[in-house]
Length: 229
Length: 189
View 1: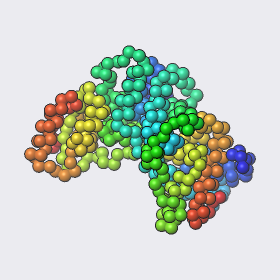
View 2: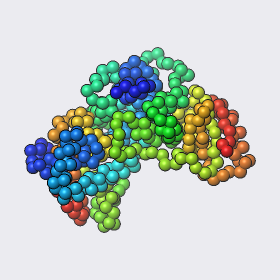
View 3: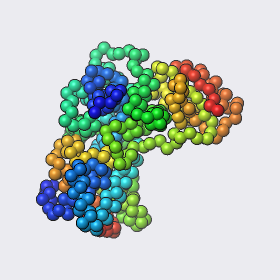
View 4: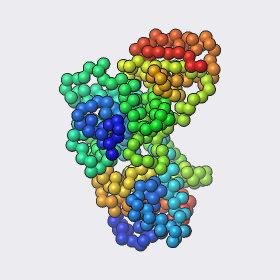
């Protein structure tokens, strides 16, 4: 059967064809009203909505299991862009991560969203997971379809306050966070400070001091580090 | 709609057109994962999907000046990504695929029969989704995962809106048939 072979079918067929978009909230007002009228008149059809939701849930699960771009992919793109554009812009003149983060975050209207997005965005940079869905602005989604970090809320354990150096790149910050097994749990706070959890348990004072001393050596990535109380 | 800070997708595309590198990095942050996953599902190879994702953004960098607001930037970028994947698939025999990488993203789920025997309905649906044809899988992904409207799918895939609806219908019908073959009757169609 051709793909258009059922387009002129019964009203039921036409409604059934619209149900996926009814569930995702992507129908025009007219079509949505049409579906709702049909569902009211034919309540037995509502059972199909459950089938659509099952399909949707499992499609999301399949896609979420796919992983993400590897760390360093953005740097590869920027190299290609520099090659494309002829004379390269000196790397030092490229925007620092904080500037880019600020740009991402500026799409949010409220301080709470900015805070949540800042923590999420840094975690994403560090862990090479999704930024896109967290800062998407092309309309409300009925489902959050990308991996939102689950551990960005303030949590127990050992935490540091860190301000990254202006010129620090995503790769450098990623590397640093991997080195200390750190996760950014909040920020930016005043002064560009981020709170970084380096252990889920409370380390001894000596161990924390040792980590902090090591970080203070990495001035190309960090401009300030202290223990968070 | 213009944002107060010039960071709507449309504004970012305009800034990319004027060779603003912050703008392309912001767009990259917003869309790289979604485009990558879309491409992985199309080409079934992570390394190639990674390359095509960057090729897509490179094309955005080069072509932003020609972007017309008839479609959203998101839809435009998905269409670019899809075109690149389709071009590659057409000459796939000329492309040396890394078999190991390709295998790594092959479906690792149970077969529908095994999932059905375990009584795991969610796993069964996933197993049957993996057995849809490429064109059915594509439209299902665009609708359910990438949250695209009928018009947007039409623009990305390059088919009429009625065909989008019927293709989705057939994909869902096929899914039910596959589940029925595994012993689960969904009661539809």
